[in-house]
Image (cartoon, rainbow, N blue to C red; front, top):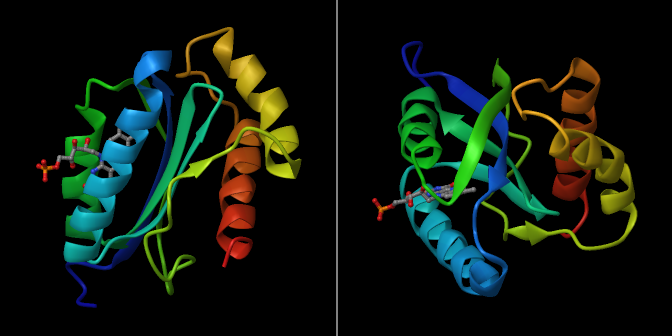
Length: 147
Ligand SMILES: Cc1cc2nc3c(=O)[nH]c(=O)nc-3n(C[C@H](O)[C@H](O)[C@H](O)COP(=O)(O)O)c2cc1C
């Protein structure tokens, strides 16, 4: 990885605008596109959908991460896009682009639940450091499970 284009990771949260009756179809479309584009640009990471919120982490060469984020943040299927972490990486946390995780129950939901309930009642822009750390550790737990 050259100095101008280091290995990099960005995580964000956003609120879904997808109507309930289109959810399965739209999540499948996002998963399909992400799988295709991310593999082609050397991006890895994970997208979680949970109670109307998205939490995503993307890792890869900085240029590729920035280009993908610029596209994703303009997507009309979500709003309140908020970057919660940006960092240079020595090595990837995710070896590949994971399947979209839809969390409807289980320990990960319990972990995220308080944070998301709280987020739902106010602008997503006011995410606290503590909430960021809960979401990142949930993503990390998701990275270390299901594989
Ligand atoms: C929550 C969310 C996450 C997304 N994640 C990705 C992603 O990781 N990679 C990607 O290429 N597109 C992702 N997309 C889709 C992009 O916004 C955009 O529709 C897509 O990249 C366009 O690809 P195309 O120019 O090849 O048609 C995501 C969309 C949403 C709503």
